[in-house]
Amino acid sequence: MPVACGLVILAAAFGLRNQGTDAVVARNGAVELVVLSARDAGPGTLRDAILAADRLSVRAHIVIKAKRIAVESRLPALINPHGVQIDAAPGAGIIDAQHQAAGPALEIDGARSNLRGLTITNARTCAVMVNAPGTQLESLTVKDSKVGIMVNATAPGTSIRTSLLEGDETGLVAEAGARDVSVVGDIFRLNSRAGFWFVGAADPKGEASERDPRANARIRVVNGVFEKNATGAVLANRLTIFEKDRFIANREAAVTILGGAARVENSEIRGTVGTAIFVTSGRSVVLARNVLIDNAAAALMIRDSEILIEGNTFRHNGLGIVSIGSPASIMPIIKDNLITQTSADAITLIGGAALLQHNQIVQNRGAGLRPLDLVQGRVRLKVDPRLDANVFRGNGADVVQTSVYRLSGAL
Image (cartoon, rainbow, N blue to C red; front, side, top):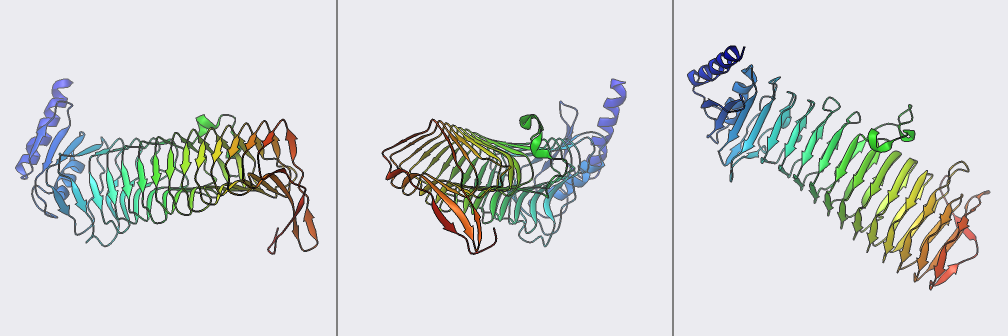
């Protein structure tokens, strides 16, 4: 059997040589194809290497040694069922898709394919589209594209590591059905819409109530940096966990959660121009052990959300926590947080009930706690905070009397 397999590999390599493609058999049994030409098509080009890789009955390994490749039309998809690995040699592997009218610059349709060390720029649709399971993207640079990386529902088990997504409209987009995706050590910078986008309709099966959210997370984002994007991350109804991430100087928001479950833990959120974290219609949202510092507007604004805010540090923000009118069945839990040096109020509750437990609320310029009834026309939603063992000290006012917040729109 090993002899037969060896003959198959050698025959594949021999056939490629006959077609003018530089191919050798690597130690791992893959056929290695080397890209030396910077042209769009012809012998020795990336297009030629992908076509050759797709015809193989074994795994293919493409090594790009050409410095810059300007593609003029859509490249073939990677469809080899045994997988294709593409590596860029040092100082090589820039793919410029500026003259490609439409479609992804690289499309991965073969399972267990890998891209490593490539730079892809100016993709008008998408730089990398992932359609196959087990894909690994490592140390990519994706710049100045409409979408940097698109992960579709057909690509469970995708891993994106130590990559830079910079100056795109959206750095990483995950289709609503995406699952088991890990995003580790990546940088999202200067993206004009968002660094990360994972949005879907509400799940009728109640994804938010999963017993073990960690085990059921669709995407985990770990040790990422989100810097100077319009919004760092936008989520809706898709369970995502952020751990040990840094959100720095994003303009509109660091994290926006528009429904469903999410967790942001052990992360740093700093220097946001707008509201740092905004949550509306959230279910089973957890914000734990984060540090929110120097955010110009509210550090955290929540509306109509089931949320646990625990063990966070809020320091030197415009506002601390703002909670707006929740239904009687929903009680946000705010516990074991430190809120200090806020320019205005530390905690503002506008209608509804919230549980405040064991918080340290000290040395804020405005009120430590400002409760407000929410009024629209003749409708009044009373505020009813539950206070348990909090410390209010050295604030402009510690706990002020309840007053009214009048809303001109619909409740």
